[in-house]
Image 1: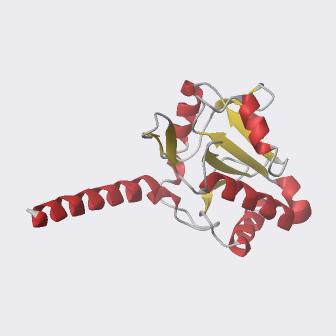
Image 2: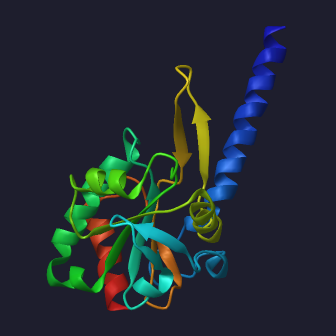
Image 3: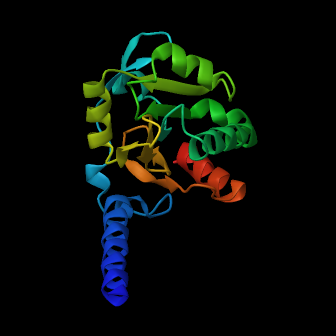
Amino acid sequence: MKAVRYIAWGLVVIVAAAAIVASLGWYTGQIGDKPAGVASIGGPFTLVNTDGETVTLADFDDKPRAMFFGFTFCPDVCPTTLYEAGGWLNALGDKADDLTMIYVTVDPERDTPEQMKNYLSSFDPRIVGLTGSQEQVDEAIRNYRVYARKVELDDGGYTMDHTASVMLFDEDGTFKGTIDYKESTQNAVAKLERLVGS
C-alpha cells in the first residue's frame, strides 16, 4: 500500500513540475536572444496607479520597461525583488532615467491604490505601482502570460502563488527576456544596461 501511495505522490509532483515548466517556459533567454513565445508576451492594459488614476500601456511606451507581478501581502519574493530593484536602479546611475520599473498586483481584492502606495513607500520611489479592478488585472495577467493563483489558508485567509521573474520589454513593447528571482546584481544590471541601450 505504501508503494502505491509513493507512486501516486510521485505522479503528483511530476505533473506539478510539468505545469510550472509549461507556464514559465516562455521566460528563458537573455537580452538580445529571441525567447520562444516572444510575440505572445505583453500587450495592452488598462490599470490604476497609486494616485487612483487610470493608466494604459500608452503611458509607458516611450521607454523600455521592467515589469514584476506580485502582491503587497507577499511574505518573501515581492519585498526581496522590490528591494533588489532599487539597487539595480541605483547601479544604473543616469541610465535609470531611460527605464520604467513597474510593479503590478495580482491581488486587486486587497491591493487598493492606497494600499499599493503605502506598501511601495518602503522601496525605491521610481517604482510605479499599478492595480485595478479584478477584470483589469486579469486582462494584464493573461496578456503578460503571468502565473497567478489564489491559495486558501487554514486560518480563512489566503495568499497568492505567482510568477517570480521580472519581465523586460523594449520601448516597442517587445519581450526581451527576464531577470530571475535572486539573480545576481551583476547579471541583473547587465541585462538592464543592454535593455536601455538597445
